[in-house]
Length: 412
Image (cartoon, rainbow, N blue to C red; front, side, top):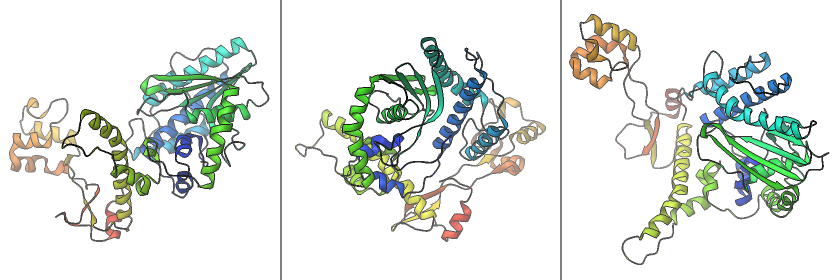
């Protein structure tokens, strides 16, 4: 699947269409993988392989249970993705394969690929020449300068084109109606893979398999091109130039420059409240709560950015990096259980389903007894780096080199 990203990517269209100067600044920030982006990349790779396998087999019916012999050239790629994801402790990651067939394969296969495949078969019943394109390249530069991208799946039949978007995350449900990302995908499909067809109807579908959510929207191609000409193109040109005004809002959540954005900082600190009276009314509380979502998102991004800077040797004045709190762990619970059994303790005293917590075992054995019997099995992992006010009594890391070395295996 494609890994390059355009300055004006369709996936970020809501952001750069609303806050036009942000795109140019975001392009200067190195992209950084997260647990969620790795998870999404892996899920899209699984979807692509599954649908291509179905096209190669050309079976009308999608299998009752998704099974797949990974093609050799794809297995290595998925293994690499899964290996990277292990550091984030994702629930699907498996060292021996790269993904867990019991979760990702079944979820993507049964709740996304099956949906697309059945729509494709329905299209073929109407038009035997219907086609299904997987990761279809889109043609966007006519309306969005230097933009490119691909759609997870495109079906073309008769005078209709349908675009599909897989969203593997478990966040909020996303609506297809008036969704600028989906409209960009649809526009790119009409101008690209469907350019030789007389397209009049455009279908857009978002599938979120882990939320059991499907949202679809149908518009005419005439309406799509009207939107592209009057709304998309002017804003895309402005955004490409880095011009226009900064407009803070909930679209800032995934913006790479959000932590340093002055417009967002001013917005977060200037929530308007009527100064009449001493206490807020219910209406004012409702207003503040709605605005608070933007504020909380901005503060979280700001804290992460400041911590990253400090750990990298560029401390924020007035703050320092200390070792965060961590909990003791029993690293070899099986050996601990054998030791307790050999010491004559009744199983019910140290087991629930698994070995009881360290605090419960200390109550059972006493601290001396615990250290004597189980001390060799206990470890206390290093706490994650934490940014605190310089007045915090905990000692700062001695130097940047020490901090980087001490925390080299920890993902910030």
